Length: 138
Length: 186
Image (cartoon, rainbow over all chains, first blue to last red):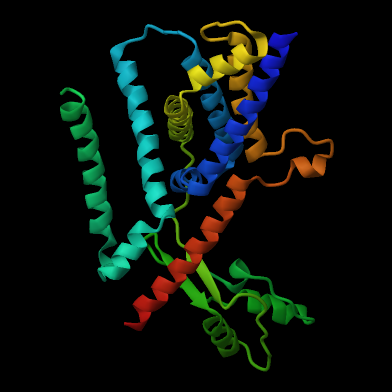
């Protein structure tokens, strides 16, 4: 009886977390940007479902001790996808906070946005590399 | 590009209507670009080619043109693209959830809640974590599109993602027209 209640609490907590995560993704609106860039808007429904599926699956895997025992290279591929997502995520966060537009207005570099975004790109990649290769190893 | 490609023509006289529809307003270009036609251009072209008519334009003042090649259907590439996007979204959203759980120490809190309710001190209480995982998926689904609704009409409502896409398109069109106009002035 009490474990049933525990399951119910878990379900309701999950619904709140899930909708908050979805709201956050939509607020940052980088998923719509991805779809727009890839010119693949016919499949919007599929993308929504895949996000829900991914979050759900990972949520379960996080709590349990599952291992798939796959090749190293597959881990690299998955990490690449994760990095892609994280890159979009962080850029979208900076974009929502209007960092770049305000900076470029103050510095009067409206027509050189290309350089700003490129340097942001390299800075983020370098920062990530520094973190994993130097900081973590120490 | 003829008038009929960018809008509808209404006229009582069918022959004049046909004539107006066949007025050429834009010349073909070879490369793929964006361009625009202003309402003034359309009116002057129509008035030049046909005598004794009045033209009233209903709608926006500028028309944005997207000049494209004929799209060649490439199904394999299309499916590959969709698969890659799906993989990115799948693993990415998973990473986001794991990040969040690690940040707030979800494992300890769910065990604590399970202990409070049942009195059992278990590591990884499946009875609680599986519903939690299902709940995460359900929450995302309910945010993106209406899952539970009796009426068919409400289930067809566009979700926030579709609305965001639509807004994005509108903003982009506005910016493109503005930039093209600026370029023409200089």
